[in-house]
Length: 199
Image 1 (cartoon, helix red, strand yellow):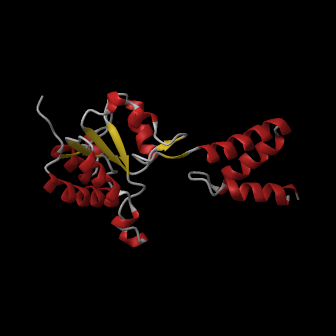
Image 2: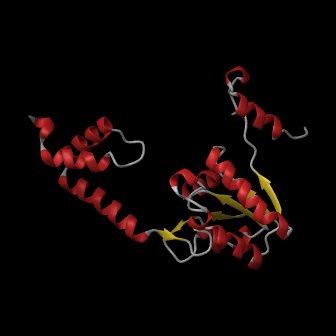
Image 3: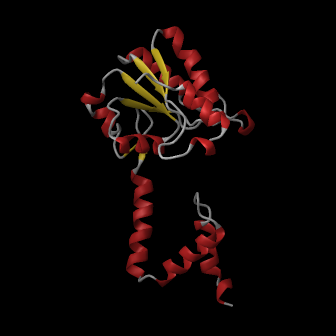
């Protein structure tokens, strides 16, 4: 039976390991790849392999880069005293799409999660504190996710930084633009009220 062809099943199994790709989507992708001309499949495989080999972590902030330092850390105009702390490089990409933030970043490489055995020593917190002692940082913006791990991480880092005399802020969380209050949960509404500002 065609669905039992071993090379396609092997390909689907590997594709299913990607985030957001379920078993059915993986199988559809595998069949699609098999139907492509061989040169296109080779280009796809080469792009994945070469991309993985070429990308590394920035020696300063921990973002993805092709060089020793990422383009943000290399840009002197970005060093405005603000340092935004995020979980991973995907968060840097999301904030950069906004095109409003003009400071630098620090990528933690995860969030505190005692249930998964991830403690402070597993994150780039030591490097963050080192940057605060060597760079001219006046404000640290904590931009971890508004989930249990993100909140715990932000609280932990804030407690470490406040004694250093550096301003610590947390991104506001609340009701998304375009949504109705009646559909928002209590935590979201509480965060929206907490993060209110004068108009």
